[in-house]
Amino acid sequence: MRSSRREIFNTLCSVAAEIYPAEEARQIAELILEQCGGVTRNQLLVEPNVELDIPNFDTILSDIRRWRPVQYITGKATFADIDLEVSEGVLVPRPETEELVMRVAAEVSAGATILDVCTGSGCIAIALARCVKDSRVWGLDLSRECLNIARLNGERYAPDVQFVEGDALSDFSQLFDEKFDVIVSNPPYIPVSDMSLMRPNVTEYEPHMALFVPDDDPLKFYRAIACTAHQMLKAEGRLYFEIYEMLACEMCDMLRAEGYDDVVLIEDFRGKPRMICAKVSSIAR
Image (cartoon, rainbow, N blue to C red; front, side, top):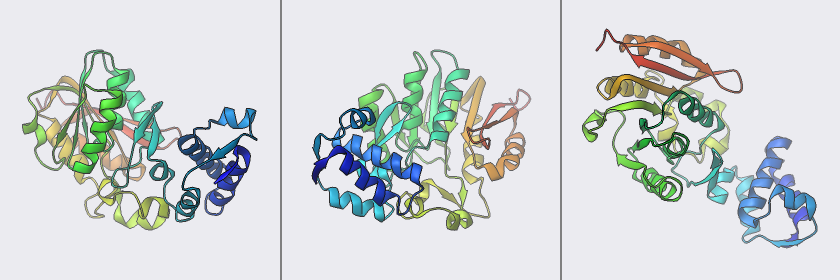
């Protein structure tokens, strides 16, 4: 479609607003204009009448109407000020996860060894490698599709990050010779029964294996990772998780039962308990 920047932007806004709230629709339009048309918000404001041609514009509009996430439409997801490659089969990074990265980066020292379990697009591992000076960072995931995307992102933004294939539910300690200052994870944590409360842009497109856990054992990933982390963390090492706010108390109880202390719940920007940090108990060692 060839038209002015403003007309294209207004069309994107109008179509997105058919199913999304107005502010979210505007953000989607801005992202598509920038990622697919190379036009920033400032350029739109300063020169709205410049002609623009976005390839496959009708397909983009159709994708929006079908709830396809804008990150899959553009193939990019902005995270910690970088544009990561994403595709269907790879979880779209969330702002809450950026907060987890910032928390970890603020609390670890330069030269830290860091392992990101369930790395997905590699967003946590790559962002920490960029934020923590002289750090050595690894990312672990079971999905080869995710690892391929993570490696592409790593090559572009943090070439020294190493991505390893492994199952978070197994004893992945055997894959590493290192002891870690930090083990961090954003594993699947949404009970299957809550799927009905979520929008189609998530449930119909994003990988269920990266999102959902059985109702009868919603902490299965956390418990497995916490158990394996015992033998992988250094004496003063820390375990960080992004968590499901409805299971915050259960997470604290589980970590203490697994031999952790200094368990701290951390709220996200919405005021919800979204992160947790713990250390291996000195008694447990």
